[in-house]
Length: 270
Image 1 (tube, helix red, strand yellow):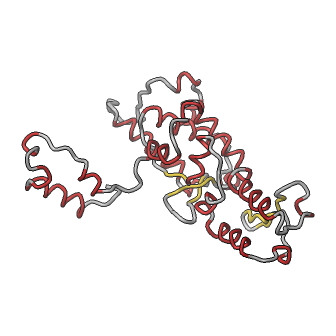
Image 2 (tube, rainbow, N blue to C red; image 1 turned 30 degrees about the horizontal axis):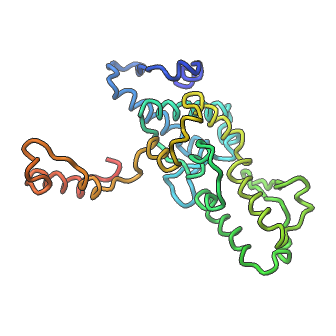
Image 3 (cartoon, rainbow, N blue to C red; image 1 turned 180 degrees about the horizontal axis):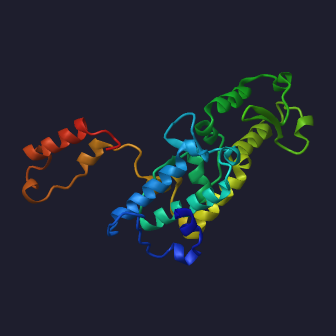
């Protein structure tokens, strides 16, 4: 129902005020229903079991696009990415939070920033280390590499050429930088180009790309997802006390109890 409703809207409608109603549930949308809707929808889309996203190898909380989403999600997987892009854009537009952190280069794609070789480490640390090790080899040509990558698609090996005629181009010390750049481009862009394109188009349906130029990728992640962990010391440092607590602040007995409970009896998810 949510997909049908959101995908039926034009760009202007995406920027209007929405009111939410859960089927079979009564309630007035004073902000709580909207918050719950964004949480439930984004949690479902980012759930690895759905097959659209995978956890990063270095951080289970950071999600990357599943290159095999078409196989894992046999329905029209690209519609889901367009839908999620619109939901993420609407969340940013309305000041709501998205229940799912993405790997760093995804925020760079949204901003139109160039990706770097270090971004590959967060997406696939093992392959990043494998490529990085080539920089320490005296004679790369002796390793008999060419401009191809062998993809494992559900147990079936598929050879992908990283450039036209890549299977006939040997990797040497001279063209090693080009080989690394080709791998970076394939893994973080070309490999998931259809999914990424739909996600970005959906996002820009709500928030045009030029309006995002004031942010960097860290600020964008913070605005969209909030802090992945709460720095309690920082929270305490910048808390403003008023009323009967203004004089003693954190040293008052009640405030000490509060901070003790927050620090020792609540986890990050609570």
